[in-house]
Length: 374
Ligand SMILES: NC(=O)c1ccc[n+]([C@@H]2O[C@H](COP(=O)([O-])OP(=O)(O)OC[C@H]3O[C@@H](n4cnc5c(N)ncnc54)[C@H](O)[C@@H]3O)[C@@H](O)[C@H]2O)c1
Image 1 (tube, protein in one colour):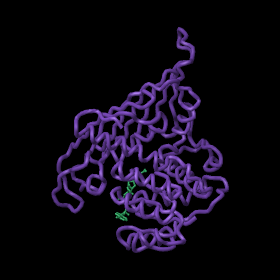
Image 2: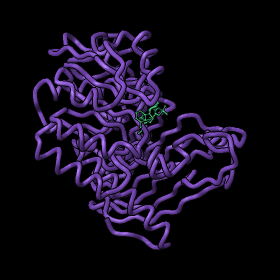
Image 3: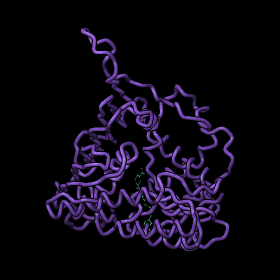
């Protein structure tokens, strides 16, 4: 399968790493995949990427990849604002699509893309890589087995500190004209997806945005006024009745890639932190309540490199895993689905569209200072 890669920034590199490492981590994959062509905003970058990573060719336009009969898959790693037009073109050209989050910049765009992809029968997957971390897979297994009972509440926070350096020029992720939405789109989408994946669909949200640094230098170095949220705080109710909070921030001093998740149910609770990606903490409320505690207490389940077949052979289940492992699992699931022509892949564009609706409701709620039903 030949992939046409659009954008070669941090995610272009990450996806390249994932494609190239599948053969190490998975037993005899039933497919072969390679990145054939790459397109970026400057031709020079694309040419350098080809030299460094051995792609066949650098394209001068995205159309050169999208309308190329040799290309089976379009991998979208460009800034958010361009996803919608690229998606429509690529779907109409019959390409299978691996798209970075957020799918689009509005719920209406996302709905349109879903319908088009469904009509054209292409395999479409959105990159919510954190679903593929071993502790999150184990959390899903425990919840599906009913070990948490009825889910009552959740807290998910994705915290960075990058916006606190006021001497740094704003990047495109801080410029609403290019990102379409601030940290809610960037980090919040991951947090919303994890809650959605593990606990179900959202029903109602109440959100507040924060811009902590009103002005800084813009992308070109000139004075600039911040126009995208640097933090977003949300309370939410799910269709299952659970109520909880979602927090996304780039003004959390002292954090690195701090994604934390807590889920509380009638029969048990789960806690996870991306900064400790080898473990899932599980509290089984069904343990007997003896005078000295019995076996009550959180169990630190070792997830490490324990992935289901056909993974797990290298580097071995005892080897610690990290953030990249999620991207690898996500890419494998997508390529395997394309190979089997299975359009029922998850998270798909419908999942992405639900997240987009939740985020849009969050922004609407912030503006109107009231909760919004999705
Ligand atoms: N899933 C994740 O873990 C994760 C992490 C970071 C970013 N993302 C998402 O990935 C996407 C890309 O983010 P990034 O961090 O790699 O950005 P980046 O700034 O590092 O890279 C963007 C790339 O796109 C190119 N580009 C810019 N405009 C373009 C255009 N119109 N057409 C073609 N190429 C263009 C740039 O030259 C660059 O190569 C975004 O949608 C972002 O939300 C996902």
